[in-house]
Image (cartoon, rainbow, N blue to C red; front, side, top):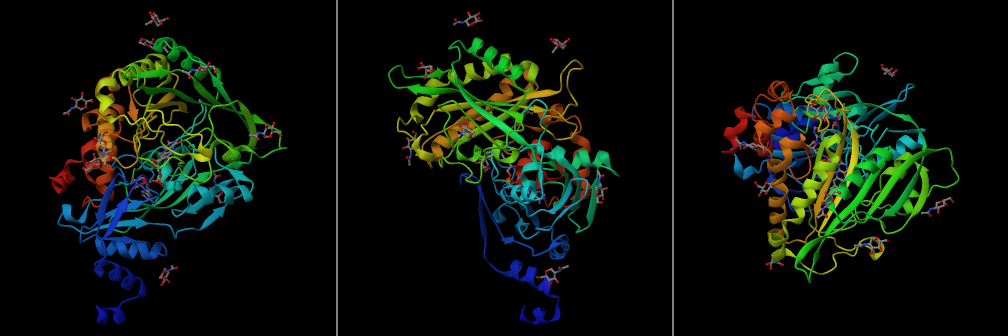
Length: 496
Ligand SMILES: Cc1cc2nc3c(=O)[nH]c(=O)nc-3n(C[C@H](O)[C@H](O)[C@H](O)COP(=O)(O)OP(=O)(O)OC[C@H]3O[C@@H](n4cnc5c(N)ncnc54)[C@H](O)[C@@H]3O)c2cc1C
Ligand SMILES: *[C@@H]1O[C@H](CO)[C@@H](O)[C@H](O)[C@H]1NC(C)=O
Ligand SMILES: *[C@@H]1O[C@H](CO)[C@@H](O)[C@H](O)[C@H]1NC(C)=O
Ligand SMILES: *[C@@H]1O[C@H](CO)[C@@H](O)[C@H](O)[C@H]1NC(C)=O
Ligand SMILES: *[C@@H]1O[C@H](CO)[C@@H](O)[C@H](O)[C@H]1NC(C)=O
Ligand SMILES: *[C@@H]1O[C@H](CO)[C@@H](O)[C@H](O)[C@H]1NC(C)=O
Ligand SMILES: *[C@@H]1O[C@H](CO)[C@@H](O)[C@H](O)[C@H]1NC(C)=O
Ligand SMILES: *[C@@H]1O[C@H](CO)[C@@H](O)[C@H](O)[C@H]1NC(C)=O
Ligand SMILES: *[C@@H]1O[C@H](CO)[C@@H](O)[C@H](O)[C@H]1NC(C)=O
Ligand SMILES: *[C@@H]1O[C@H](CO)[C@@H](O)[C@H](O)[C@H]1NC(C)=O
């Protein structure tokens, strides 16, 4: 190896050094319950170094997993462990690809290294923002957009719809420029690529001028009759353009020995405003356990601050079971009631796992553990092939607006027995309700469905899988989850 070092260009030496170093790299997701062990972790200093690395590994069929910040709940981002196949396996981080160019027409081109927590303030300094974000700024931009991450709002779409162009490196090390202008169909395929269509090294998005929002947080009392409760929730969805409905919750009642519904909810809703006299939305935010949900208040801020928390990720640091399911808004009252009734009916199974202690402390010590928390949000549909809110299989009379139900089961920290039980619970909803309500699960939350189901909710799945083969003939970007849930049969042998 020493001899090689003097005779090869620096870029090649640096990846050979990584390849030959025996340091295995263990990857964990954000909550440390999903893990894998790669041969190594590769962090190229620039695109050409990455291209060399990929070209070197193509004939070797090395497994390659580009990652953002691991803020998922399932196995989408899990690498293929070195010990599981004959191949080497690398985790790739693009954190050094940090160039950023703002164009006159409010479009912005930037490298795959940008995380939302740095990107949003940078855009803001230039008088810009994006149309929508999820409830936090913890993700990498590509990591978030490529899985269909969304916020809330009947006229608000997910992050992937902000994309106007992508620069993607395939498994052979060739660059593909995909743009809305020249290849609009392909952009619909690549905008939600879930890590399997290559390494996205650069993205161009449509940004917009800064705007202010007023955010209102309001506690409301719901009906203890689940049917009526979900009719109320559907009505809130009709009434507010942009609302996040936190609750109801289920709590284990130690006297009754069952889960009881607490129908009280916190509505968090946003309205456009011209008022710029305060910027106080980051002080507190009833979202992801980072702030208080138990009182009424208003705040004003730039949109990015008003809709997403900075930067602390999640404030509760225990394991959590969570899925998020999207379905046409027309079914909200019915589907919501069915989901809740089913969750509550699992009381007896929950019993052995109940720990009465307060889990926390969350921010300012206000966070109490609810055993199950439901959050309802809204997303406008789109035409991206693998979008969870794709409109390809809707009834002709559907509005094209989707509701989402996010279920979180919250156990004691670090108890795998309980976490696996929650995974099992989470896996039961698609077989039970999926076909009835045309349910599509979030790609990066707990997700378990099979190829047959995927092809009904993603009518363009087979075209996407064909594209996947072109970009990745040797299955280097595939893991077990992708092979199974999308039916990528040619790669299946790797995991048998
Ligand atoms: C606390 C918390 C709050 C959340 N809030 C929301 C929310 O409000 N709304 C919502 O919709 N979701 C939410 N999520 C889910 C989250 O937005 C998604 O899981 C998102 O994908 C995580 O981004 P990441 O950068 O951590 O991606 P990772 O999990 O690291 O990666 C996601 C996928 O992107 C691929 N990828 C990453 N970078 C590249 C690249 N450069 N090229 C090709 N592929 C790449 C990976 O291979 C993987 O398949 C939340 C998750 C958590 C844990
Ligand atoms: C990429 O990084 C390598 C290693 O730091 C350096 O040798 C090379 O000149 C860089 N290439 C470009 C195009 O910047
Ligand atoms: C992820 O994969 C591992 C290993 O196959 C499995 O044990 C675990 O249950 C999976 N987790 C989820 C949330 O699907
Ligand atoms: C925006 O400007 C850039 C740089 O001038 C240009 O390449 C691009 O085509 C423009 N995009 C749109 C949507 O007008
Ligand atoms: C709940 O409300 C619905 C609709 O008002 C009603 O038909 C049903 O009987 C109620 N259920 C119970 C248990 O009261
Ligand atoms: C719901 O809110 C009302 C009004 O604030 C309160 O009186 C009631 O106790 C709450 N119910 C539960 C179950 O917490
Ligand atoms: C934010 O500022 C506004 C206007 O001054 C005020 O009415 C509101 O109570 C403040 N909110 C918080 C959370 O401090
Ligand atoms: C995990 O939870 C299970 C079920 O509640 C319990 O039996 C077990 O003792 C817990 N394990 C640890 C290490 O706390
Ligand atoms: C759409 O049509 C279906 C089938 O004809 C019908 O059952 C449903 O109620 C209609 N939905 C709306 C929102 O009109
Ligand atoms: C695939 O999933 C669907 C929906 O959950 C289920 O009905 C079907 O039986 C599953 N098929 C196979 C082959 O597992």
